[in-house]
Length: 116
Image 1 (cartoon, rainbow, N blue to C red):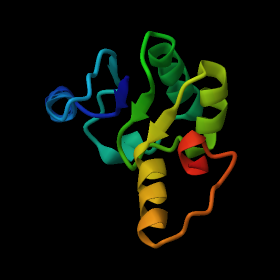
Image 2 (image 1 turned 120 degrees about the vertical axis):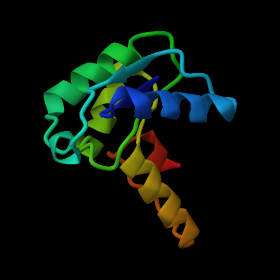
Image 3 (image 1 turned 180 degrees about the vertical axis):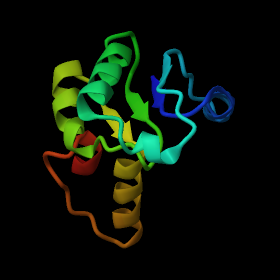
């Protein structure tokens, strides 16, 4: 599943980009914000509800796109509730940066990705 804060034109591009790389996006949701300042103000309960709704469907994982989305502190709890990975842009960026730097430490409590 894919959750974004973006407007329709960006959402369409995101889905097309991901699917062109062989990853299906069977479930999609968006907050439809144009202003990045608004994105940073999407509250935790709204993010959690959206992830839970998307993740309750038959999907392997939920990807939350956008570095302005403040969801890192919710990921571990959402994964426990859904029984599947929840990955955010910032979480993936942090994991990849650590690996590029040769750091293989795990960070339990911040989602499955950061335990790999």
